[in-house]
Every structure is written in C-alpha cells, then in structure tokens.
Image (cartoon, rainbow, N blue to C red):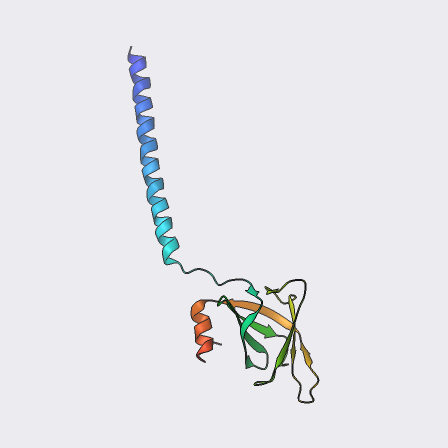
Length: 140
C-alpha cells in the first residue's frame, strides 16, 4: 500500500509541476504579446505601382512612396540624378520595387537624352523616417 501512495504522490507532484510550467508559459506568452504591441512594425519591403511620389534627395538618392504610404530610398551607384528634373522608371516582370533589379531608373540629362542609373540598394523606410524625408529633415 505504501508503494501505491508514493506513486500517487509522484503523480500529484508531476501534475503540480506541469501547472507551474504552464503558468510560467502563460506569463511568457503574455509578455510576448505585450512586447509585440510595443514594437513598431518593420517597414514594408516592397513598394507597389503606381508610385504616389518620387523626390530626388541628391544626385545619387531617390525617395519613393507608393499609394499605400510605403516608402523607400533608392541609392544609385553613381551620381546620375539632377534635382528638379524628370526621371524615368521601367519595371521588370512585376509592378513592385523590392530590390535593385526590379526597375530601371533614368535621370534626365541636360541634352534631353536620358541617363541610365545603376541602382545600388533599395532601403525601406519606417513611417517616421518617411515623414522626415517629406518634411525635408533627412537623416543621412
């Protein structure tokens, strides 16, 4: 009879241990939910067509924003953009800009002949970073 009691005590102890682990897991899940709501969402990786705004920041940086409010900086491998001049965009295979191979950008040349730009990187911006560029407070 003593052996049955020990097994019963071990079973009750095991259930109690599972209850403690479950409570700790529940607390961990609650902390994860709280952390998730406090952490801002990462910027969108891709911008969709049509673009709402394009703005030349400097000779090798272009700010773009789509109609959904997603924004990015497109860095060129060299100075090919002229401030206050038109640019050309040619999409490849899709109407999204996610990386350097998704679109060709041409900057206007003074002679009227478009100058091809080589894209180095596409960097998504958070909503706050995009607002800073819209208001002329870039953080370069």
